[in-house]
Image 1: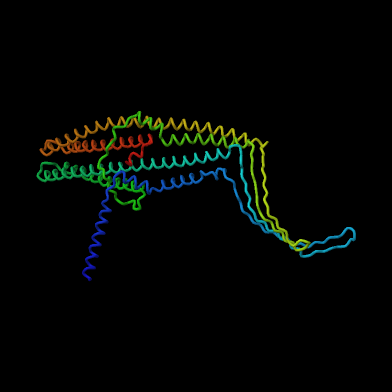
Image 2: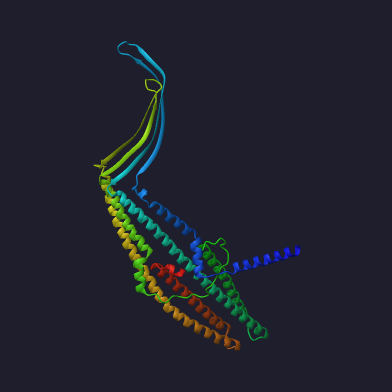
Amino acid sequence: MIGMKRIFTILFMLAATVCLGQEQRKIYTLQECLQEGIENNYSLKIQRNREIVSSNNATLGNAGFLPSLDASARYSGSAQDNETKLRDTREIVEENGIFNQTIDAGLNLNWTIFEGFNVTSTYSKLKELQAQGELETRIALENLIASITAEYYNYIQQRIRLKNFRYAVALSKERLRIVEQRYRIGNFSGLDYQQARVDFNSDSSAFMRQQETVQSSAIALNELMARENLNRRIAVADTSIEVDKTLTFAQLMDAMEADNATLLHARRESHIAELDYRITASHTYPYLRLNAGYGYTLNKYNKGANYHRGSLGADFGLTLGINIFDGNNARRERRNAQLNIENARLEQTNTEQAVKADLYNIWHAYENNLEILELEKENLVTAKLNHEIAMERYMLGDLSGIEMREAQKSLLDAEERLISVEYQTKLCEISLLQISGDASNYLK
């Protein structure tokens, strides 16, 4: 029995180890990073709660459509000593310890039936604010998608750089080995050996600094995904940066004008300003209000012919009124509201211009980077070929250490320029899709 328990314990520990290993080896695609970030990101959660608040506020009752109904109860009493002097007889009549009580209970209804279209305008504004909340959540979501996508590919970029630095260290180490061997047999001078040692140390230092950069990018990606352990290493599925070369300016422009969240937000701000003007203008209209009540009143008397008296009944009334003069406040509010409409329209036009300018600038950068990308690919092929030739000549002793280092540096520079332009082009692609309202395309 003990042996079986031990076997089960060992099997359980092995299973747990395998599960833990699988957890540690989980490889994230871009879509998985985005899904985890959308689910857990704290800023997005805050904005979603704000959206719920604006949705909760968009009700008929909050706009004033519905009446208010109050239930109330009241108890009051009085204790008095009365002294009365009769006119005819001059007799003084004293009544001490008079204690009267009153109990009221009832329902009160108040309803503004008409107030110059204030209620309908307020309800429309609340619905617009609800739509604004949805748009603001969408903007926050698109910003998060763009940020995670950019950091995901930055992480890939930094890992490729790390690979290139590792390769540079390997080249420098091999060169140091060759120089050391030839130095010992007298083919190379001590200066060549010392220079090879300096270059190897320099490349090793650059490799170590790049490790730190990779870790910083991983921390930034973990933070955007709201992972509990920010310092945890993350494995990603992609090993290169693939750029979408199929984007067209005309489609991006049409999509931007129809679906850009920032533009839609500015347009709704203009509509809200118009509704504010209607609400302000409603103050100069007549108003009609209904009030009604139903209740029971009980009076108890300590003195007199009546011991108590109760009454049960209803009361109601209509109030029709209009403000004649309010110190010109209504006129001032209407003027300010009109100016707010003008400002909102100007803000909308300014936003449209700014978004279009961003689209033009990023599109030109995108096109330019695509051309540079092809040139850098050609440069890398040439640099690799030059490095191979230089290495062959170096092995034969026909090339100096400085010239070999230059060939190696030329190769590393070509690799660096290529990965840099790939990432910059990817950033342009991300920005173009975000401006056109299609950032969610990365979720597919």
